[in-house]
Amino acid sequence: MSAQPTPDAIAQAERDDQVRLLQDSVTAFAAGRLPLSRARKLRKAQPEFDPAMFEELAGQGWTGLLLPEEFGGFGLGFAEARVVIEGLAAQLAPEPMVPVAVLAAGALRRCAQSVQRDELLAAVAAGTAVPGLVWQDVAGSLELDSPPFTAAPAGDGWTLDGEARFARPGSGATEYLLLAATPQGVALFAVAPGSSGLEVQHEAQADGTALARLKATQLSVSAAAMLTLDRADLAATLDEALVMNAVELLALIVRMRAMTLDYLKTRMQFGKAIGSFQSLQHRSADMLMQEELTRAVVGQAVAALDADVSQHRRTSMASRAKARAAEVAMSTAREAIQMHGGIAVTDEYDLSLYVNRVLSLAPWLGNAQAHRRRYVRLNPPVAGSEG
Image 1 (tube, rainbow, N blue to C red):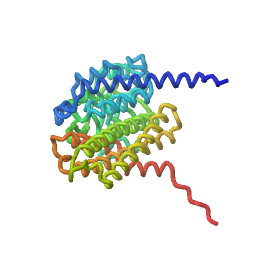
Image 2: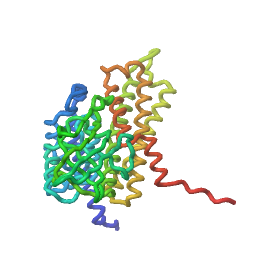
Image 3: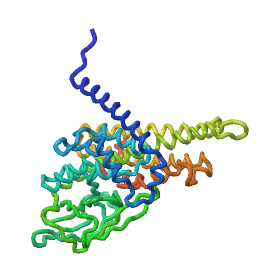
């Protein structure tokens, strides 16, 4: 007599079905509404994405997947967010899903309740607000001990000073959330891009998007602009964004390898497809192996987010996923270029779009080397015993 499935097993099976249906929906939407020609057309545009398309993504429910229902979201998990982000990344959609729907929205939902917070979260779910979290200093530190801005009380509000870099979206943000040190601890301050005392510079990236560099000089903000949260909550948000950034990179890895495999099957030399050459077959096998290893590591990190593991394990898994995905994305891009030959670096060939997106996303939130160092700090090697 076979054992009956447990309630947890039934719930997991139902969720797996839900994720597969969502994946089918995202794939169909991306194929029909997000051709690569669109990504090519939007390069170097300002804003760097289409606000109308961002609202359309919100209409699908995707910008609010991780938000509670009270704000117009669905309260789902990272397994669901993963398939949405993978599908959009595979088509090079420039809409800032990870910077906004994961990073900025994740920080906002962990802030103390306020009218400003609630309005911003509802607007993110509706696709009408595109906030960018500004938390890294000009050196790009991954630590949260020294916020890039300082906030001093000034009458009924605050005055902010400081400078930060590497904020996404670089252009098109409707407001920036500036991380600042206050006498009471850290806080976020919601500031409009055109505010007096705030200088915003756009630093162009290889894929035609941009990062924002912001400098606040005696920037006056109201008391209502202050959103309070603690460092632990912000650290959790950054870990979530790191894992979803790794998901994006994995989608690029998959596409670059697939394009290379297709090329090896069709490019003829000496009367035969170059994919029949043993040396290229070995290199292709290495690419596949690295892709599968990355898929496994990223999958474990996504599962860790949904399982609500300890802070130490969550951060370790996030850094491991980002280090692996960033390194393999770069190596896959190099291999794809070499196997394609000169055609790979021409602007007209679609592979160049993926390579340039890798060059933009791999360093964001810390490159592979930075996260390997971070992982070792969190998990120092244990010296072997003598004798």
